[in-house]
Length: 255
Image 1 (cartoon, rainbow, N blue to C red):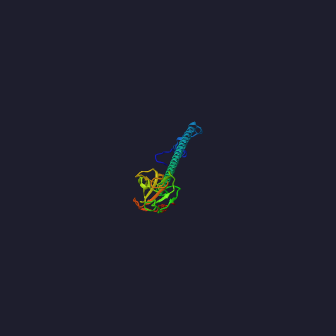
Image 2 (image 1 turned 120 degrees about the horizontal axis):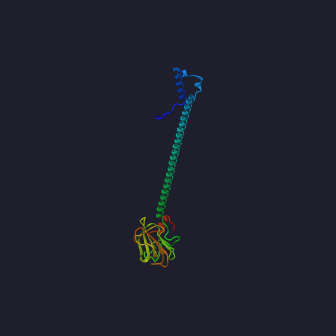
Image 3 (image 1 turned 90 degrees about the vertical axis):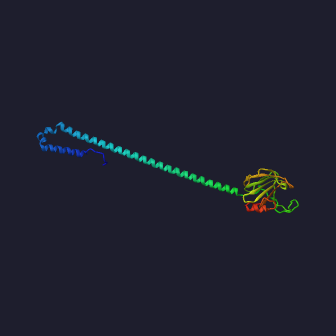
């Protein structure tokens, strides 16, 4: 039994105590001198028993009320515990969902960065869907060096010309026999030149990416008709040219 709580004696113990009291009175002669059939039926005796019974009923009601209160308290505690557990599970699920979302976003961001790096490191043809009309080192009096220092791509006047890769524009303007031209220092350290342009779309110092338009093809400079002169050099100096077709193929561009 919990400390600090006092229970009334049970009905059985109280009844026993009453019987013991009557026996004591009988022993002393108090009841003996009064014992008679009339006393057995006297209303006072019945009233005493009724008081005992009423006292027992009150105690039972108090016990029942205490039990009900304890049961209600236990149910409330159980509900509170269940609610706390449900909240904990909900928070755990929310955290798991948040972490899963963050992981997906991080994965998507990494994939996007990788795709961007791949794009910036890619190479393309200077004229989409075109072909080489005059090859590298072709001979002829039209070239001051006696041979072609680049390749010519077939391109009608006004066709878009694009940077073959990532780099920085180091020349944009008139280039003598090359007409309007653009020279780009590529990220790999080489230089690409685009000649005979009808118009320019970039300026010196500008960074360009693969496939970015740098101008439109034309027939400016020393030409017999519109086309794109494409040249690759190991330095910005004339005469350091290398085979443009081999260069493009080494970077995965069929030409």
